Length: 198
Image (cartoon, rainbow, N blue to C red; front, side, top):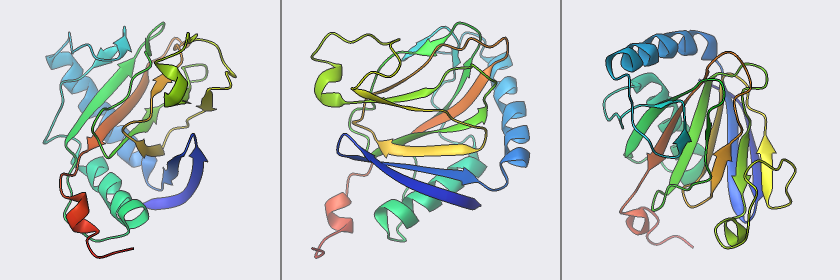
């Protein structure tokens, strides 16, 4: 399932990125499922999204991508074959003019995003320095800010990063939807998993 992976370290946090090898087939199925959900829950919910559509938090949806996320998380981050689950997963459909405000995912060990559809000029991913993001005046739309790092996602790209790391998305300037899936991994027994290790 995993084709290539990269590791960046920014603001003291590891940022994992990899390309899912079968993403074209996977994305075709996900687009169908997401628009079906959107049609049945037209209003969605509001979290960090300004405009666009955010699905309810789904616990039993998106099983294929959930498996890929967890396998990478266990292999590359925990480096242990233990039983872990996603604590939440949801879909995002950002139409023209919509974006996600700066936010973090609180007590999650790791969070992330998988990109399903990324038209040109549909908004990039920005990871933000938590030391300044909530304490200093911050222009959310200023690109190239010293306190954030910009990633230009492509279809099939999957990012994993600490749930404590603030992040946002740029405005979708395209006439097409940007579609992604996000999630949280919250583990209550991390100390037990790594007990006895130095």
